[in-house]
Amino acid sequence: MTDRKLYSYEACPFAQRTRIALHEKGLDFDLTEIDLSEGKPDWFAEISPYGKVPLLLDGKTRFYESAIINEYLDEQYPEPPLMPDAPEDRAQARIWMHYCEAYFLGALFGLRAAKDDEKKLADAKAKVVERLTFIETEGLAKLSRGGPFFLGDQFTLVDIQYAPFFERMSVYEALWGLAIPASLQRLNAWTAALRERPSVGQTARDADYHLDRMKRMLKVA
Image (cartoon, rainbow, N blue to C red; front, top):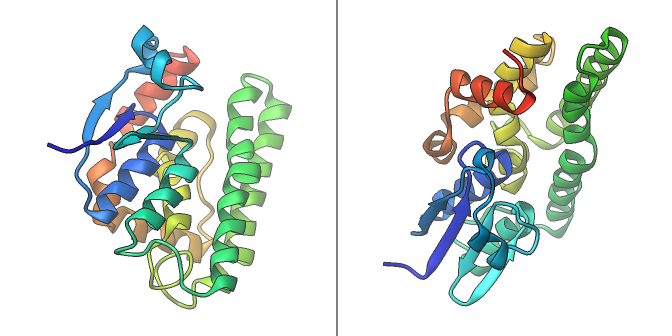
């Protein structure tokens, strides 16, 4: 038994982030899955201020928003560390975590918004490739120091921030014809390293699962 409880939805990439962090830390937790496609139960609204997953109860304290939960876990349970030691490297980590939320995810969501408009879809795909290229040239090329992960040899919260969305790249290719360009060699190597990480594998679902969930969400055949 544990007094650590995670409320999650297995198809949610944000909730997957926190499951990855908990596995990295080797922390036990009671998992409650909420199928958001079926609507939220009334009792969940009573404990979740935003009505979203993930939500973590650690003892009597409640945490929400995946990036904030994961920083809390890293500070409260420091071994193994998921942030670098040097202040400047920690700042770089936060810059790239912010880039994911403020720039990369917005470009991905633009694919969904384009729907059947060919011009909008072409523009949205070009924007995603632009963001992927920026991650390769300004992030991985300058910060990975030849290591397999975003900041080098250490697997960090930066990798966790992006991992669920790169797991779903097969969906973007199947529905919108978007794949990571082969020319982005460092980015492709990094995504391969993510797939080999045990904590990522423990939370992963296959391409068919993600495609089915996306089609159901978009209500397409």
